[in-house]
Length: 323
Ligand SMILES: Nc1ncnc2c1ncn2[C@@H]1O[C@H](COP(=O)(O)OP(=O)(O)OP(=O)(O)O)[C@@H](O)[C@H]1O
Image (cartoon, rainbow, N blue to C red):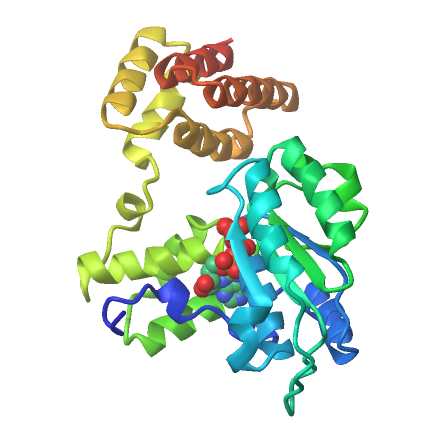
């Protein structure tokens, strides 16, 4: 891919552990393991875009010479190939071939391969159970790195076999520095308020921030970008009147606004996220009312995951808020 069309998230993916922004605890732990040429099975978990995949790839680059990297590392996305078959076929096939003992100067070249299993929280329980046995069988020649967002969705026997590394949302300062470095390298010169808006809309997710910056540059060039529009967030001009209608117990206006939100293509989940921030900051809302709202959103979220109608869920949550 040419420099012009390359995605900035890939172009600026940290290639060494030292390049990672934040995540000091994780990098400290891994440096110790690398220094000894040792690596336990790993379970990396935390929100999207916080550096989990980048970290294990950087570890692999530190351990193995580039010429053998491809033979030593298998990267798979468990959500693409869900189910038990992936465990039985691909992993066993890769794990059952032993590694050569060839050493390279400057690389620990440990005598094991690494299998990176991304989004493994989407694997079925059966597949996870099968993975547990595979990990046992091949543990002398293979290390597994399981990556997920929700550690609670990983079965306990797998969790207990791994060293757990928790990735936190990136801090605002670290994100801002990284974003400004990328902007400067790409010769992007926006007003400071634009970077603030990008960070506001990214919630500690570096992938989201970098993608948003690149979208601003692609669609607006040197002009002032409309970050709100590009981020897919609900414009304040739509969500604020909805909140006003809810507070005024004005069901007619509330329904009209919900109709236009859904007609304009905004998902209920996006609206909940915006409402969440508004409700949380509104001093006129009591803690008990906030708790009721969170409960209603949690119930709606479950319904949406089960395939419920966005419009109805939005209406239900707003009706609860009215009360
Ligand atoms: N800690 C970080 N320091 C610098 N850049 C980062 C960091 N975390 C993420 N990024 C940026 O975001 C992109 C995505 O990161 P990565 O794939 O490592 O995230 P992830 O935590 O594995 O996300 P997911 O859970 O969605 O798979 C990287 O290519 C990089 O540009």
